[in-house]
Image 1 (cartoon, rainbow, N blue to C red):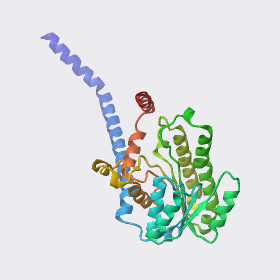
Image 2 (image 1 turned 180 degrees about the vertical axis):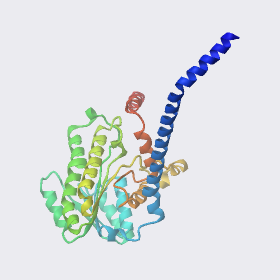
Image 3 (image 1 turned 120 degrees about the horizontal axis):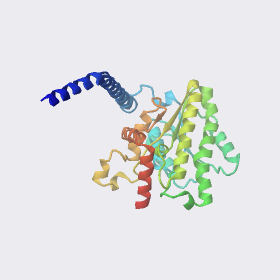
Image 4 (image 1 turned 135 degrees about the vertical axis):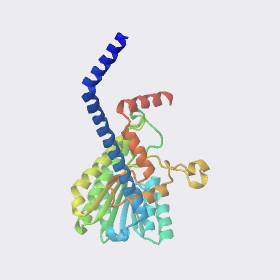
Length: 321
């Protein structure tokens, strides 16, 4: 009985001496929980502000009044860029397509002109000819109020490691995704600065968030476009130019009619036209966004995965594929 009493007495003494530490730990836990709750609330508010409010309460001014009457689209062979151009045309914006191969782009231009009654121009530019392409683009810009520049990073048809890519294909991809997109911005910016309004939209990829196996060049190109956009926004946002970095994740490349019923309900892999409608609604709202709220949820999840777990999962993926 005495041993029991002595144990209880010892327990009470230990509890009394450790009580300040318990209170401190409880306070630290409460502060941490509150901070995480505030971060979560801020993320939810940002999600609503960027993706839902602009669609619920749209801007009363037309896009042409806010930015300009014409848009230049580079990379329209990509489904997402084609859909973005169509969404701009739906808002009454005339389109200039700059392409290195006009096979499919001319059909797109004719369709937009017929469907929405806007002017469309297809400009064939060979950027391997030094200043020749720049001169042709400058000539095409004369007399036009360019309000939008849309650059789209070219994606890979299938995953390829760096060693599997042919040298010329690698040079062409880097030139198209980095050099030409930068040059296009350099050519269009002076007119926008003169009018103190305009929007530069660089569509890259969610691959800029984390490295992906078999997509080294895509990850690097997307990372460049993302940082390039953020730097441009920092430099020119005070001069009336809105620069946006769009970082979409997976977008369906199949027509809706050929999709299965389950894929139609796949919110995380939208049709290009669905994505474009959401993305255009974020113009003037956020300078860096996925453009589509389910992709924003994906982006938030990816950011919270530790790098060592991501690398381990990538290695497992490579070994299984």
